[in-house]
Image 1 (cartoon, rainbow, N blue to C red):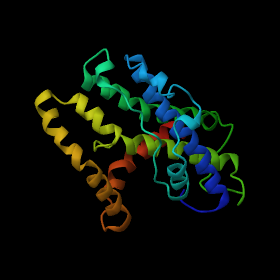
Image 2: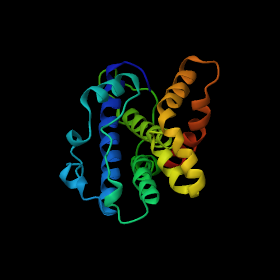
Image 3: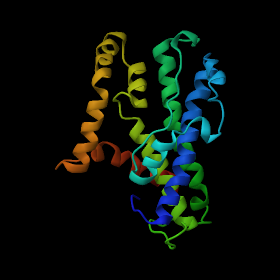
Length: 214
């Protein structure tokens, strides 16, 4: 999945463009439904990738597999419900959208119309079976990775909304250290002897992949 053949880069480019766009649109749409009308004025209620993609970060993600889109900014004072519960719903919308995309992409496989291949049959353009494989896999990776309960990932807001008030206040203190913890997990998995990150996200990704494509 992290090769540098032109077909792999094109497959990742297509998948990440769709995955980032729908993920951020889902955040914005739920925020808007909960009362944050600023999403319209910010131009985030659209599936136009230009509203959600950071060009240099997108290119970095296509090349390395790590990256992000433009985060959706929402305003607590505009929500028509408890801020922590609203934040949880806004946060979980992104990963759910990626899972739904993977499940939809898996329909042709489930129907026997197309198989999956983890290797492209063409070094220049991805074969349909390889593109579908990459599309399902990357969307599931995005969904599961973002559900890690470490700020600034979506899982942090989800867990924050589920915790009782006393524990939530304690947990919020983690916010200032979240990026360091996240980078530590990524570096440990990439260069360390013990892939904690892989152990966290590997099993749910495999389970969801089986559900999506069998």
